Length: 391
Image 1 (cartoon, rainbow, N blue to C red):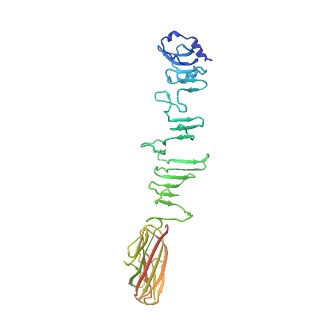
Image 2: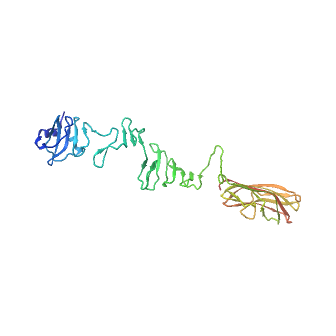
Image 3: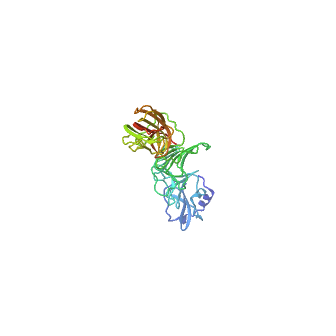
């Protein structure tokens, strides 16, 4: 056993009489040292020299702190008992500091009373596998947490049963994945609004989900359930179910409606008849008399099928599509034809692709380009409108 020079000198100048009446434990092993022993206002150090004998030093001028123990203690494997700082535990001083009487595998900490303590079964270190467990004694990964995880400082509320990232600065909260040289970065998080979810690729926000559920692809402020800023490539079929979903469409039709009009030359007449029936509608309404109204702006395909006759032979006619009560049929989709005989019925068809505003109306219209004021009769009429794209 080797003593430091200062301890050797102190023990050789011992004064046993001054320690009379001071109780010391009888346990311990040879070479154990007790520090910071107080008696009559002075501080002493004692070493167990034999089974029943503790040898005391002269009084020290100041109380030794735990971080100076290595300056005074044996480096021999003896145990040190610090009466003032850590008297609840035994400490063995070798070439390192080893705490005994603590739970194996638990992580110690300094408690509120300044004593070294363990975590009451919450922090575990698996030294064999270099794994840290929080709330789990047998961690299965480098960090294994049994419970909720919070990142940041929430100002109110509590952490849910998820990984919660809190940010009170108004900046974006993100989980990012990147190469070590930071040349490629992708991830998921918010764009500064905690209720918004954003997906990042190469540092750019390419997909966004708003609080109301609208989803944008290459669009950070989608105004529909799905808004795509760019082309869409679909391999396979596309299906829509339910009223109001998918592409807008609508139709109305009349059979043997027997609509008549004395026609002046070059005057357009809308075909309005209560016998017009309603066909299939989705985002389109029918007034019951041959007028369709669309609920959304867009590019529409409109088809008109009409059968007419005239009271005067050889009259030139035009049938077409009138939009929003303009008083004239649009040039696209007009059908030009001649009624050769009297009361001979002729069916013609016209179609057009038109950009329409929201709440635009669609009606069938016809006129004669000849004089004579013939009576025009319409027996059959069908109008169909289908949304085919955006404006």
